[in-house]
Amino acid sequence: MRVAGPAIPYVQSSASQDVPPPYHFPDVTVQAFIWPAQIGAVQKYCDNFLNLGTREERGFEYRPLAAWPYAMLLFLDYPEMISSSREPEDIGETPYPERGITSQREVFACLPVVRYGNGPLGLIADTDIECVLPFIVVSKPWSCVCGREMLGLGKLLAEIDMAEGYYPDSFRGAVRLPGWASDAPGEHLSVLPFLDVETGPALPTFRLEKSPEKSLATLFQSPAASLAISTMSDLGNFADFASAGLFPTAMRTLGLKQYRDAKYPDRAIYQALVSCRSQYSNLREMRMYDEDNVRIRIHDTGSFHPILQVVLDAGPEPTGRPIEAKPVAAFRFKADVDYDHMRVVHEFPIAGGDGIVARPAQSDLSARWFRPIKGFFSTPRRP
Image 1 (tube, rainbow, N blue to C red):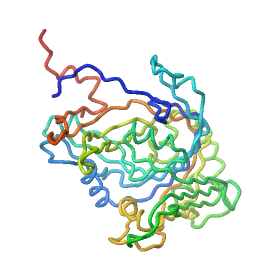
Image 2 (image 1 turned 180 degrees about the vertical axis):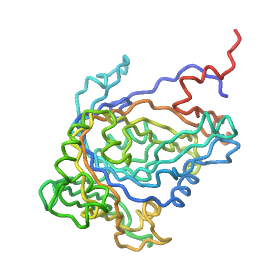
Image 3 (image 1 turned 90 degrees about the horizontal axis):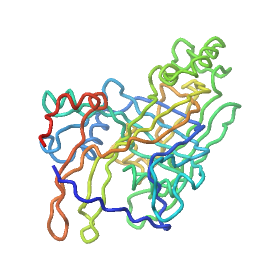
Image 4 (image 1 turned 120 degrees about the horizontal axis):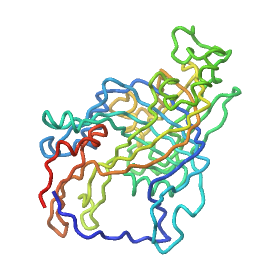
């Protein structure tokens, strides 16, 4: 374990767009779409980006959450984004919480994974559920910077459209982002269509593609169900109730945060798994869509193909055509969202030499439920 030295202050610059958490986002509109995940593809993602080195060296292994084998796509419209830090700041500039508000749009796919600790004790105390984001795109450049620098999330800047669809009370969303249409030599980077979503009207609706008893969404089409949803909207577990457990009210994202060496760009000088909690509260205005009236298409072009291999059943080579996702549930709601409780789950060791400073591995693997009682099982330090 590394011995802590004196803290090195971060050099703040007005040229930087990174704002540290915590953040508070009130009155967020969320559009959620859920379809079956490809378990083998999720495991490959875990092995490529989370399970670095050997299990004995790192002390854990990430695997897909077999009990919840779904991928979730979220469109989020943030009308207000606020820095909610209560700690005193001395950055030589206006403190972040006093700078006012901004807004943005965001789209990401989310996959639940389980971290299993090593050995009998690790299996009990270190096993936890987190969420990985194979892709996340935002409409504002500062959010890209904050996501990458602070949260360890590979955010990309994109053009994001959100609006009512063809029918009243429906939804239409589209994402375009820079990419290469193919891997052919000389291909030019351009802004390409990446994702298109279109729904029918929110339930209850006249447009049903199948009988109510066959659809999860259509369980909520009756006036009585609508009244029940309105009643439940004041409860903390509203999202779990209304989505049949398909949407968590607290999500802990997990990302590989890493920095390249300036002299040897193929080597990392820092590499860690970083987690941050997004907490959904004050959930309200839940409306379901008939999933058979939902169309989700992700374009299988050169730059986007690796993403499709994780979230959809894409083949070994890009087809150049859109691939459709078949949702099992689709709904929308409003909520207040807070991003907080950021921590380093595991820092991977960095080999020294050639001007690179060696860094030993260190971990903070204890599961959330185990943290309050962790002290009862640890050896007290002697003075």
